[in-house]
Image (cartoon, rainbow, N blue to C red):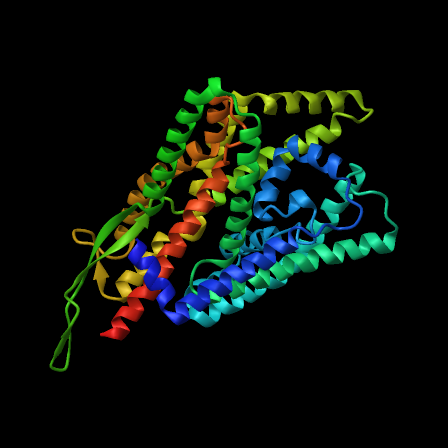
Length: 423
């Protein structure tokens, strides 16, 4: 490992890429400390401590939302636009063809449409968020012109982060959007560590040790499952062109265990936390029956067992849903048939598609249960250890591990390419 690190920094081009990416991350963290005008810090801190939904949004803003900075929206609007565009590929055949069949040019057009959609997403998010915070008296009273300029500022900040993310991605040392989120999560760890040290109780040392061992086991499990895949053997028939023979080789079709990534957890949290926030707002209205329903709903969602069970089931459901959106066995079967490939013992065409679906459903079940356990892990850890300051959410844990693994793969690919150039 040390040899690889030394090798990375001895290659001028790769070293410059990594330093460039680190410089952009520093720019992002500096912008995350510049607040919008008129923020009540004490009210802001109290609001975030009692609201799980904004805790999730804070993760995807890279920690910038907790400071109400000029980049408070983070890359959230871009992620929302990406999810919407992915879902639209199921409803609009032309978009699906553009994304899957038109190669790199089609992907570039698809990404451009995603950028266009990010703008209205950022405007709606910025307006709604600032109005909510103003109603909560977290942002002091402003005149219309200052409030409008604040909206344009946070929208511009979100678009600037989208641009930074794409610049980072072009350097081929990791996904830019993921690295921005990763930087925000890591930047928050020293604060959690400081809070833990302040409230440290020597009598709780066994509990801290159990927590540490559990955390290491969970991180190892995330790595194993994230990297895990089911390989389906694929054979390619021999083809004769003139005096030359092509094909006749064996390959494999990899089905990832965690096919959907972190998206199912995001969907499930949105379904669970939005009604919770709505119930908190409606419980204070003057209509008795509506306030009663809202209070009952808020009480049900505050029950840790009910909340955790519903959360777990929703994650499993959305894992299957998102996998169905992004992975098409029929398309895979057609591509194999066009390339002269087949699965040994399975007829090409419909039979191959059905076989892939059968295997995929079993593999996705393992990944779905894994995601469900990771999602409810903070609840379980808090119940058994009583620790709340050092508990990293399941979404944050998945992002951190996935970003590290992806960056390692890309850097390793850069090293391998340069080793071949040396030969």
